[in-house]
Length: 476
Image (cartoon, rainbow, N blue to C red; front, top):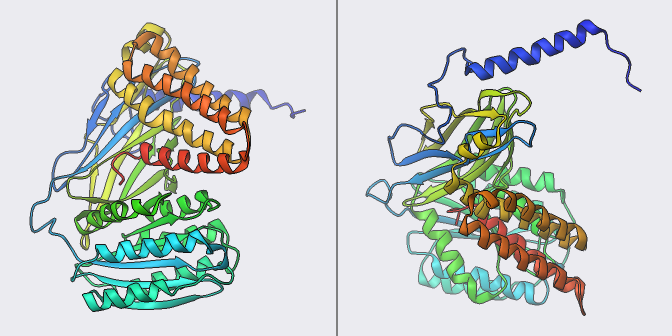
């Protein structure tokens, strides 16, 4: 039972809600300045200038009264193609942090050594290399040194001798590797960290919070910390979280032959970086909430959130779908809030802001709502973001052995996308709905026959990794 509230308090609360709705509906921002009217618009951009562009496209300019109030905006962050000297290839300082604990025995250490060899093969004469290994404690196996053919040969031989033993003190490996790299940092060089592990931390500070806090050092230093998961039992959720915190990429490599192409792309990106430490700041208007941003962590910042997708290399175009919940109890027009992007160029930082404040309406009529949908943007939102968001959730349910929950999430996607596609008749969305049928069949198959746990584990890992990559268009 809730205590009965005095009528005057209820009336005051209702007046406050009405006032806030009125402020948002009139379009007065938090500085008390009315923005340029943009109700009905779906595209927004920051004024041009510099090597980076920042724009956004809403998938709709209205939400329907009494429904979920969700709207998506596709944020596009792009770097101009390389022009010397701004995008000249810069030398890389590569730090590999290699798990050599007892849990890495067998194929795991074999594949991990192969990964290190592939990375050594990608390095040039102007690069530097270091290797930290860890088990019960961390060791600087190879100090940060310039690369030459003699060194490369000696390092390859040393890596071949690494044997697994002891516990998994991942925190000590991260601490030592980041310390070495930060103390040796030089202007004009690109630091880059790659952690290779099964993610089964059990000594030192094994907590996800502690490990991701350490990875945040890379974000603060505006360089990338990427992770490579090895073994059928590796902890993909921890390895993804560490890569996200380090604004790097997460890789699940099933075959050693895939490693060369993976690291060639990683190094090309690092060497032609034009903007580092990307930070997207969203300050939602009253009544608006940021729900998700392509699975990136949402970091609280002032009255809003910050998304840190990493760095941007010459010619790269990143796309991030942001899902927002909008007030949908009162008909009217509302600000979504402010959107800005900051990034580093050497020692300087630049900030770009949308020239207009995106606005969205809450409407009562279905026809008015349907007219507000930017069908091309909605198609991309369904195919790129919503479908892969669903696949991530399905992968998690499979990992937990929950067949019915996994199938329910597939059906929810089909119901949601199918209802709107009955109106818009989108061929790409229709194809994605057929793909959802196949996914449901594959999910059911993973729970049938022999050796189910192993098949479910492999399926969930590959499905989840593919979904993360597909949601984050242009990240790799």
